[in-house]
Length: 132
View (spheres, rainbow, N blue to C red):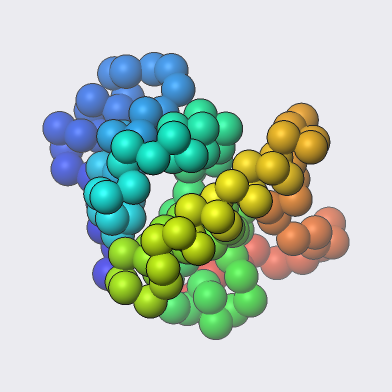
């Protein structure tokens, strides 16, 4: 099942160019619990990874089974997955926030090229992932 934005939220997102806000992030990914909204690390996280979060997509089971998916699937897995797991109650809040802090520390070390590290390298002739 894929959760899409309602038409009014989608229109609002397109009408409001600029950096993604924490509220827009939470609206885009309802699986992320709302209790992290006011954490300082969330504001920095969304500011640092807003461009990747804008295109991130939860991979379907067939994409995951096929070996990983495209960049937008990897962005979801690397950036949103820990928060979604916490939302299910399968991880502790402090540990999840610490993971976000570590991700941000890695980003601060090389901000210009960090997004490239979120996606595994593939050869030029590698097929696109998807259901076949």
